[in-house]
Length: 277
Image (cartoon, rainbow, N blue to C red):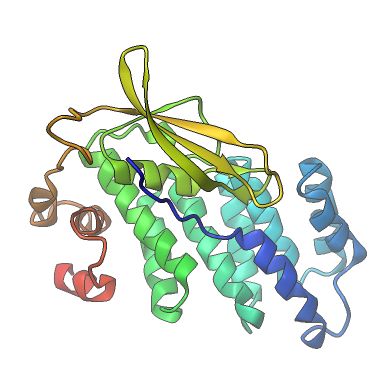
């Protein structure tokens, strides 16, 4: 087994680089506490939050501090606070300077997804995708919200796996579920990058083990996925009943879209949504 998992570059790093151009939009630079908060994020999250709060008090119209507070709270699994600050960042950033508004929207979709409020994740994603159809992070998080809703509601995937926190092991029913879980995992503010993958037998059970690093921390970590299917007859995983979910209009539209994406990840999202409305 040698599947490749592509994980996105951390939005935080990109956002940080783009913020250097914001002085052309604001009459003054963001407060020094904002930059102190950025530096503190990987090493002292409490200090980073405090610095961002001070930055907001000094310059309440600056969207960047709200964005990073939202990121910090989301990664700490305090999604209500994350949603509040990310929504504020979106509302203040009307100019979408260097696409930073799009980054806040991508994070907002993800915060709703982590909260498992799939309806709001869907509607936020639908609006953001309509405004910024070329943004890959928005498209990915929008699709992931729908897929998670389908897997949790209709296939029995453990809902506790929808978390940025790395767990000791996961029990999955298909290879794509491994990809989905891995995309949401965060270590010290960075997404995991998969460097290797191997099939192992542990206590007479089959596991797919992924070796991962982050961009700045090169320490290798293992993700263990217990494979809950017959490897002799279902090599890539179980085949799920997608059609019955897709064709039942009593199911939420985001669950039906999720089923469509599980059936065929290449479907045109806009076209399929229009068909199901």
